[in-house]
Amino acid sequence: MLKGVFLVLGLLLEFEKPVLELEKKLRELKKFADERNINLDSEIEDLKKRAVELKKSVFGNLTAWEKVQVARHHDRPGTKDYIRFLISDFVEMHGDRLYGDDPAVIGGIGRFQGTPVTVIGHVNGKDTKENVACNFAMAHPEGYRKALRLMKQAEKFKRPVICFVDTPGAYCGIGAEERGQGEAIARCLFEMSRLKTPIITIIVGEGGSGGALAFSASDVILMQEHAIFSVISPEACASILWKDSSRVEEAAQALKLTAKDLLDLEIIDDIIKEPLGGAHSDYKETAEYVRISIEKYLNELKKLSLDELLERRYKKFRSIGEYGYEG
Image (cartoon, rainbow, N blue to C red):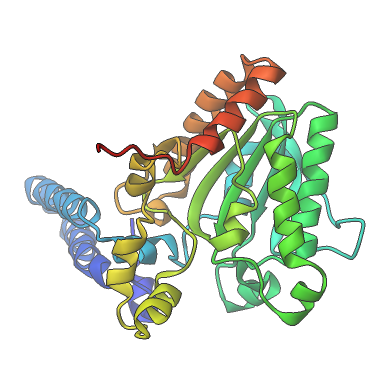
């Protein structure tokens, strides 16, 4: 259930407010019934049904821009949350063996349903202090080189790789550029394209630009229902195309950045359902949906020979962008 404190802090999305208000009334009615020892079961049940219907109406008809806002929700579960729920015996590894460590990217080894795996993902904070510490999930070159080091290690020990994508983009500061940001991302893409082990990528929040693409040259790309995946942010797109950053809603629609859009374009392979109210409304249920999808596709990939795996991955990316026209 959405936390009432969100309204107090002004962190609730505008279209979530009617849902929260109805849920607040439901809590108050339950409390009143308990305190007065009155049987209001039928009224409470009616209010519950109304809350569910309202959630379905709100979250079932989100615009592209509203999905962007949900994907960026400050309380949306991130890589560390999924590791906590899905990966047992996790051991984090640090450093790229070239320059240093990058807190914007977490990586390590653990077990998924008993299978040894390598897990890599962007790190988002839940508050300003945490976000500053992880540079708002915007990785430096050493973050991508750390990830690549762990992928090559996974290849050596025949461990599947699971990547969680949640970043507005790679960090574009002077230091990052001096240390080869573009090369680091390109190297990730190049090596992932021929990595001799199964790779699954899950876009769990905002998948922005090359920073997201660096972890997405996978055998299977999954996307949560309200996540986004785009070459550029709607704000930047509107500023570049129309010199007007206020046209973000129009830009979000034009970018085709929602899970449904990208599935229709055959860029992603499947959509992972989210709880009613979004992933931030129930971490446990969200993680269970992710677990089911990873298990399904990991089992499929395990059945392929190494040659079949690499050929399938090659064909997957060669086919993206192909369109037929009737002359």
